[in-house]
Amino acid sequence: MESLPDPDPRPGEVIIAVKASGICHTDIEILKGNYGGSAFPLVPGHEFAGEVVAIGADVTGINPGDRVVVDPNLGCGICHACQRGRINLCENLGAYGVTRNGGFADYCAVSASKLAPIGALDWGVAALAEPLGCVLNGLSTLDGRICETATVFGGGPIGLLMALALKWRGTARVTVVDLSEDRLQLAGTFGLRAVSALSSDLVALRHTQDFVADATGVAAVAADLTGYIRDGGAGLFFGVCDQSDRIEISPFEMFRRQLSLFGTHSLNANVADALPLLSRHEAEAARIVSHRMTLEEILSSFRNGAPVGALKVQLFNH
Image (cartoon, rainbow, N blue to C red; front, side):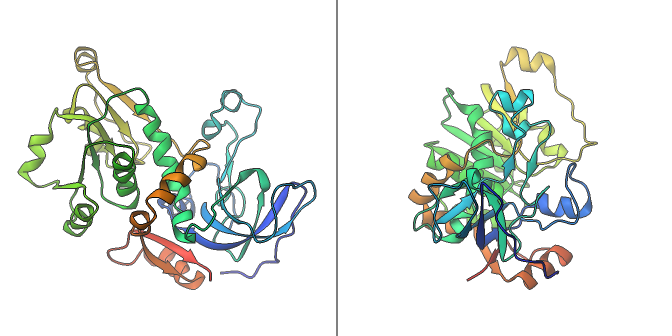
């Protein structure tokens, strides 16, 4: 914990008084030095919302008092990916909380171009726009596909957001698979089908799902996605496996069953799509946030791990 000078806005920037900022597993990996491109010293936090309190030169259309959420990704605008609108795949990708100071502070300087208005949306729910944006980037692989049945392996906060986004977008039957009975019970209260990874019910899911996503980051789970996808369906590697992990895929099975497997990284200007979903389903989304903490308590979570039973843990500045 450090005391830093309050930031001043440069041209094109605003200063945000941070109101809510969520811990992501990526933050822990940055702390451990396992996330390439991160810079130290660094104020982490890339899932944050707040109130505009100061405006730099050349900023128009934004005023002090505006309630906003941040899209943290910063593309170079020059590389091949940026030229094709794939900022999340930028060869020189930066991000607030990864390469620039982010949301675990009282104030943060942010480019005005990376803000989206949130209206009266709850601060904590608004801060879910970034992880939900990551989910929506992953679900863009379903564009043009029929998706009546879907299974998400992993009932943590991001897995639940994935399952809820599928439900909110019209998938009739969404299943969450996890080992934790507490998480499975919670998934059931959202109207999701909950199946234990140790249950015989898991067998009945095999080869029946239009879409299957791994949100565990466990290589053994990722390796078996094709076993649950129906012919012509799709699978998504969404969880972050270790860089050294390898799995086996049968090219013949991919060919004969016409399967599609996708990867996804971060979000790609998806905050604008996430906010309407969060606004329409604010009460459900709010239940993903299990703990609202002070900066001192957040520091303890970084050092000692999240509280038992936690879902999304957020810094919450009143």
